[in-house]
Length: 375
Image (cartoon, rainbow, N blue to C red; front, side):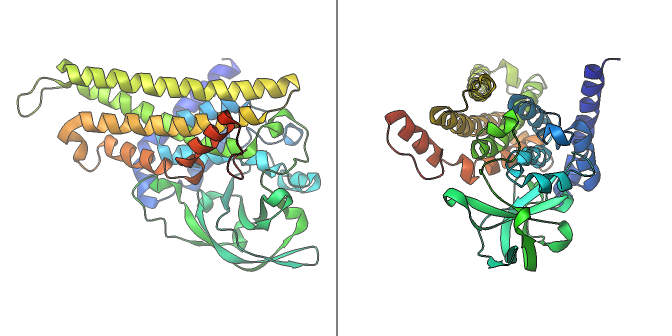
């Protein structure tokens, strides 16, 4: 059996377990440690670990497709897996710190409560940290945790890296969608963080490998946006299965026999596939430019951000369309479309994927300065 077949078999096995346990994730409001261990086996957290520390050196498209596949099985699991991309901005840590971080292997899971940025007291050789941070997805199963403690070079957020035992998790993730992400608050009380365990998010990496030339903030948006591509794919597949079933209780024709429904499904498929193609086209264009030695231009970075928000919105729109087509079957607790709808709409609310990203892209197209932090 080839390594490729073994890898695909492992992926299929893990995806099957994720589907079987997604109700558990939602009830617990986090993806448990044993499931994160299986994501590690898939290579999620070593995908972008520096090659010199045992990483797999996967391309952005390879990682994004992996997260998309996981998200098709469960949006929350995909969202937690997406933080395997954190190695891209962790690479701004000093090289000696990275050596310590990966001393026991490349599979290190990160969770970050980066906002709101809390002021930290500068002391000798480090920072005295206190504060409360929100939206720390995956924090209950993370190996390391980051918190926003001010601003570094160029006004970019400065992040302090802590061990889980230094952080109190405030379990208040009471939401409708993506419940399994465990995006609780983080509370830190009078913890010292040395300078060598801080980095500027989007700062200059200390490792010279191609992936660390990829725009880290744009990538942070992409890995979340791709969750909606996976959720939308699962949704349209679910409606296709429903459409071939029995006629409605009112005696109406089967879903597949209704012209308006066939048209709507076709439009949703076209919109989703178009957004997905744009998404990966922009990704591969930026990556190819890096591999040629040309770096990534401001225009290419803007295209990554535009493709991310468009994928998010197109995915959510496809899910909404499918839900409306499904009729009363979709209103019951436990129906898959309920979860897909709630999850997809939460993805659209992330700040990196807001409507304002279109303004940033439009500014670049028209040659005017975009909002700060967009590029």
